[in-house]
Length: 136
Image (tube, one colour):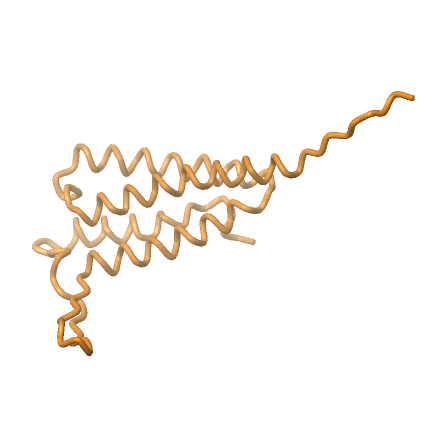
């Protein structure tokens, strides 16, 4: 699969950066969609919420990728870790990223790193089989 070795969460991270730095005055809390529910409550989906939903879909795909054991999966985990570190540094030093939307993307990237390593370790643990030798 060609997506191995590429951190999919780079896509929402790139979208955030493109929008934040190229569209001055853009507000992530502006409504994208408003729907009146049966209960007469107003459901409002913001641009930031939509980007978080996209990131969650990519997180699912990343976790599914982590279940495959191969040499490329190590590269995939390292790249995901590097992406998380880059996002963390950007969050701490760049004013445009001091938003709840970016923070949620950062948390999703952290979950990706932890889940990727955990799933890989559990999968590798199942692949190791130990035989007992009976002494007669």
